[in-house]
Image (cartoon, rainbow, N blue to C red; front, side):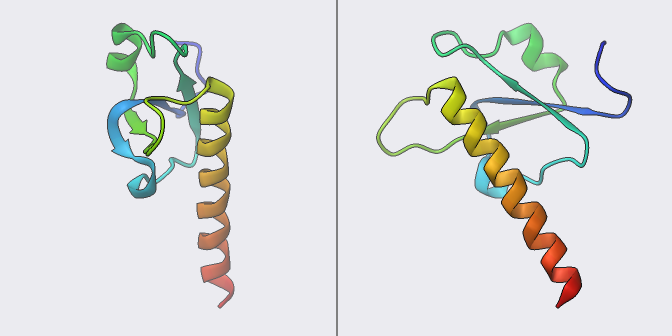
Length: 87
């Protein structure tokens, strides 16, 4: 593989752990699928984790929107953990 040593591959795909319950790995590489075909099955099998995004109005999100949601969630959860240490 060409991933940085120790990095965890996280696919963003339907049927995975809901994002709200997901604990982001410290070193993660997020793999986003195409908007029409998703992440190929061979890539999914190589991933350490699969996370999914809930949606009430759409079957799926535009890939840029999905990536923004995942990265915002990562940042928000990291801030929450950092603030716990200062309380």
